Image (tube, rainbow, N blue to C red; front, side, top):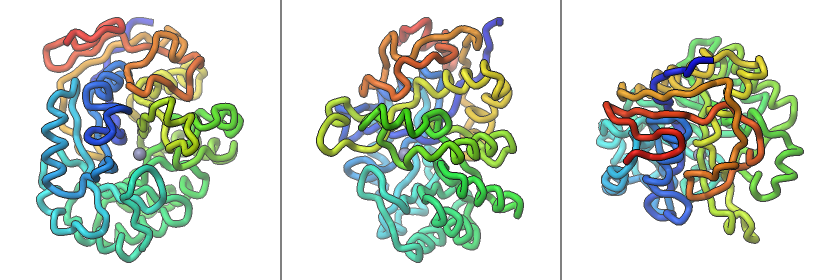
Length: 344
Ligand SMILES: [Zn+2]
């Protein structure tokens, strides 16, 4: 097939690790991974070692991100004590949402008290969505409370059948809810995860076959709006340690895996574009970034064979056949990436 030319893709959920954990990733290595994977806009999460819960920390991150190879936006964080910062943060043009961690993952930004989370919804007086990490029943309850407070909600990386059903119900009631799914929840089975050992540890965990089928159904019937990589790099040494951290890198494999699904007749090319560009842009009001990616959806490659741009240097999909390595990426009037090399 001829080369496909699309606008640069948008990933609304990445952890680029700077500041505080640049041995895992930084804004240069992370945005190189993004561009090599076909993304020209990424939205970074606030759970750095020193969390992004103040304007000062936000300003610092914005400054550090200036060296990035593509557009980087941010989600502001909350620990339940920083509501006074919300107004200015929500007005910042580089902020796209408020992330609330209602369940355990990497970092210290956990709020378990649902009433305190509801206070955060009320305090976030903005049209920019509240992003929730809330698993199982908690997700449905928090969607209800967020909407009651007048907020738009994005339920992050749903992984279970009951979560797909909760979002489907909310959408049937026309509530302002969007949701995303990760490639690892769509493609990895429990068997894959047990073979991967600590390299398959992530939050939420990979569900059962029935959960995975429900996620695919959610994609087909538009319950699921978008695919988010949840790019969460850790070093191999950390993963092999006695206390392996949660998370896997994903920026360089997301498009290739979805194109694999196209190749297998599971998805249309148009649907991939909807999941990785149109819907993320709409859900988070990402501005127009003049950019273009080129790829051949019929050309396969083996993940990891030519190494990785992410500093983590590994993938849970290493050795899998995917379609296609991005050939060329232009941002503005500059070619920044061509045939595996960066032109910057
Ligand atoms: Zn995440």
